[in-house]
Every structure is written in structure tokens, then in C-alpha cells.
Image (cartoon, rainbow, N blue to C red; front, side, top):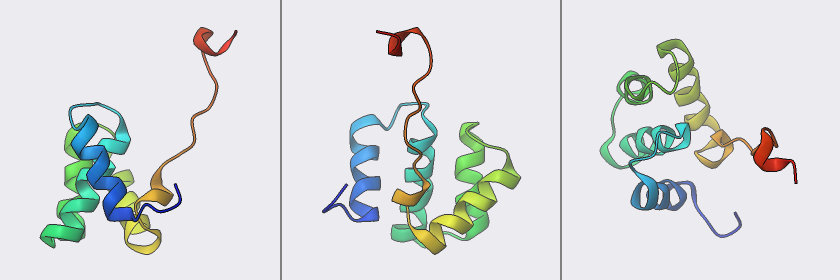
Length: 87
């Protein structure tokens, strides 16, 4: 994703697929709350947790990683699974 800052990438996700249940949307919302609103790490972790994407303990770890490495580093590459990939 060359040319995308962490904030711009998170904003783009929120703008395009804010209603998705994908965990990346919860991560984006949490990251933007930290970056733009200055919420605490605990508040940011609860944003992720309340979506059901991860446990509160895991959400706290995600927030810690987001602070250290940025938003884009949180996103995992898609693994080929399921019949849709078996062409």
C-alpha cells in the first residue's frame, strides 16, 4: 500500500466499508479514535472488543501494536481457504 499513511488507510476503510463486520474495520475505528480523538488505550481496546472482533485481552494487545507499529501492520494478508479459491 505504498503512498498510504496509517491514518489515510484507516479513514478510507471507515469511509468505504464502515458497516462491515471485518475486524479490520474495528481496528480502523479504534486507530482513528486514538489518532484523531486522543482516546486512551483502554478506550481504544473497548472499541474493538465491543464489535465482537476480539476478546478484551486481545484488543488491548492490538492497540499496543497499533501504537508501536501503526495501523497497516495490523492487517493480515488473506489466506486462500474455501471453495471459492479452488478454481
